[in-house]
Figure (tube, rainbow, N blue to C red):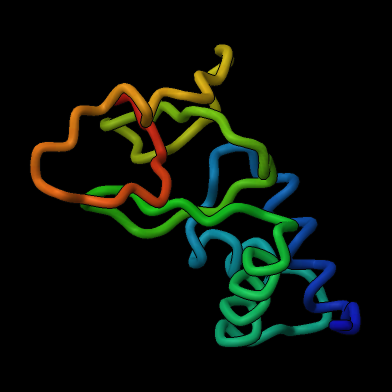
Amino acid sequence: MKRKTIQRSLTLQAVQTMQSHPTADEVYEAVSAVPPNISRGTVYRNLNRLSEAGEIREMHVPEGAGRFGHCCHAHYYVRCLTHSRVFDVDMDYIPDLANGIKDTHGFQFSGYDLMFN
C-alpha cells in the first residue's frame, strides 16, 4: 500500500480543482505556489502514481502534452484549438463503440479516447 504524502495530496487536489485537464507543467505551477516547496520531479512522479492507482486519468493529446483529469470513468473530451484547453463533454458514453470498427489491418484494440476539436 502506498503511503499518502502531503505532496501526493496536493498534486491530487490540484488536478481535482483544475477543470481543464491540466498538463503536468500546469499542475506543477499550481502545486509549487503552495508551501511546502515541491520539486517538478516530485509532482511528475505523483501524477504517474495517481494515474496508475486510478485516482486520476492520464490522457494523451495529439500534437500536445499529456493531460490529467479527475474523472476516471469512460467519457469524451473536447479540445479548444485556440487556447489548447481540454474539457469533458456532457453526453452519454457509447460502451460498444469500438465493436463497430471494421478492422482490416489486423489490429487488436485495447481502448480508445475520443476527443472533439
